[in-house]
Length: 421
Image 1: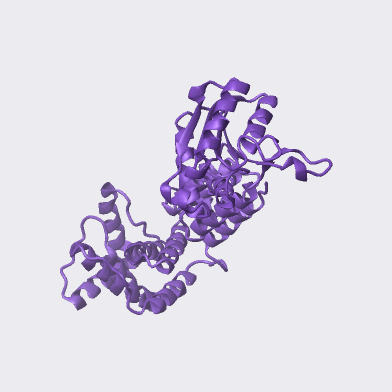
Image 2: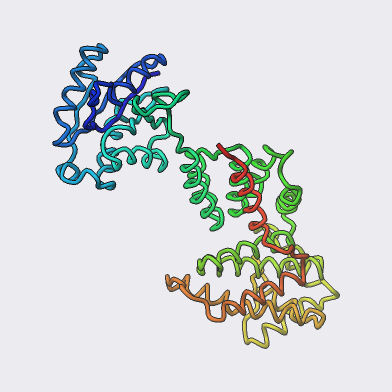
């Protein structure tokens, strides 16, 4: 463990007008007294403080026995020398000093910023760097003027900008979560001071669930099973069992998110999957027909369809294809048209099938765009489409008052906002 000190050089370094030690000397002596080894001292000087920088280095070498190669003098830019009140220039110079220090930074080492030398802009620049997260292994130090100290005050003391940094981090991560960008939020959280087991597990759960990797999502939730809401557990259990009504609801939640994020190509993909899932769910519910998942199951499906409901289901399909002047093929996997044809013949399903067929026009639009390698930046009557999509899913499942991922976001944000320095 060792310290790397970074400081601008002020007009009172190495000594003030009343012969008191300047802030650089005071800080390094304090660190020594606290048992910290001085690994490197980086002093940034302007044209006006060049002599002070050289004198400070000489004092550190002769009085504190710091070897000369450990004290590095870095000239500031001409622009900062000409205008030492320029905060942006000061921050840029401070950042260069930090970049130099990071070359020597080893595990357990700390950056020690001296925020008491130089102009106000120079002093502020170190707090800005730390609050922005550029130097997580750092401390910003203040050194009081001994002639202005009050009883009980320490000459050297740290400035805590961690609360400010935490607010910056919380704002960024919260926005990522609100946008359902779970992967981005995980990366931001990992390098922040807000990281905690519960939030990370819930973000992983959301990331995997949104990718339809339900088993991995379940595993992440199991790591915090004692604190995870029962709703999340119940939902993932149904999804792992591949219950069609649960998957249809999940597709709806994902489609709603993509639509509101204006990711219309992805929205139409999910819309197509949703329609196929609803149709498969209706075949199972109304005719006890399982849509095959494997090719070796397809012959069995067609055989069952031809005998289902005393042949009425297959007759519906034949009549539907004949009305369209399409050639009917009863081999391989059933497609959307096959399922629509079977179900459209049942008058009790007229309301549901009207909504399904409305969606079908948009599914065909998606197919045309894919084959033409076209993108989709707008959706005609998109709000009406979303309204009918919601109406359809509500005919088949009990829809909660809010999107399950919105509920998840609120739980994650509660975990992050509860953490205070």
